[in-house]
Image (cartoon, rainbow, N blue to C red; front, side, top):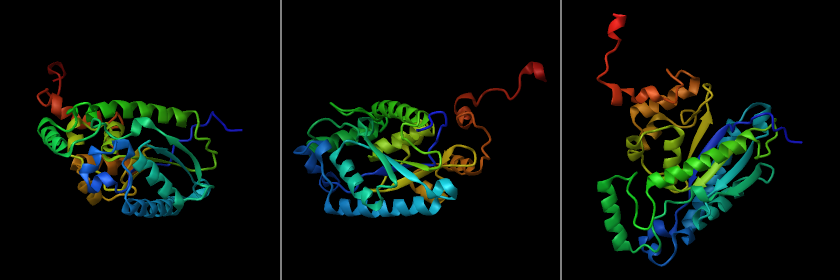
Length: 282
C-alpha cells in the first residue's frame, strides 16, 4: 500500500524540447498542417532516441545510495504530435522497470499562434512581436507568452499536488525523476515561473535546441538548481545574467543569502532611493 503521509520530492526535474519537426525546417508547413499535427522529421526521431540514451545515462550514473539504485522516471508530455513522437523515441532508452507513468498534459502545449499560419503573414507578425516585446505580445487568434505563463502556473500547482499526494505512486525507497517533454517557449515560461524570474529576465532567455534537455536537481539548500548538472558557461549561453547564474550556483550548497523567494534580488529596481536607515534610529 502506498504511503500518502510521506512527501517524496523528485530528485530531478528535467525539461526537454521536442526533436526537429517539419515546421523547424519549413515554416510553410504551418500553412497547410495544423500546428498540433506537425510531425517530427527522421532527424528529429534520431535526436530523440539519442537524447533518451543520454538522459538515462545521466540519471543512472548520478543516482547514488539505495534510493538512487531504484530510480524511476515519470513523464509529462504535451499532446502535440511532435512531442508525443519525441517521447516514444526517448522511451526506447528506458526499460519498463524504470518508467512508472506518463501523463498527457494539455497545459504544457506550444504557444497558440492562431490556426493555419500563412508564412508571409507570420513573418510580419513575429517582427511586430520583437518590437512589442516577446512576453506580452498576443498573436492574432492566439496567445501571448503571458497567457502561456498562466496555464503553466496552473500545471505547476497540479504537479505539486501530484507530489504531495504521491499520485506518481513512488515507493519511498525509489528516487523520482520528473521529465517534462514540451516546447521551447513553454519550457522557458516554466523556468520563469519556477525561479520567479522577471519579465526582463524571461526576455533575455534563448530557446532550447531540438531535443535539448536541462536538468534541475535538488541542492543542499533544498531548492532546485541547474548548477549541479550544468556549467556557468552553459547557463550564460542560455541567456542568463550573472545574477541569475550566481543564484543557481548558490542553490547547490545552500549558501544563498536569502531564501525568501529571491525577492531581495530585485529590491534595488524599486527601492533604490530609500534611505538606508530610519531617521529615528540615528
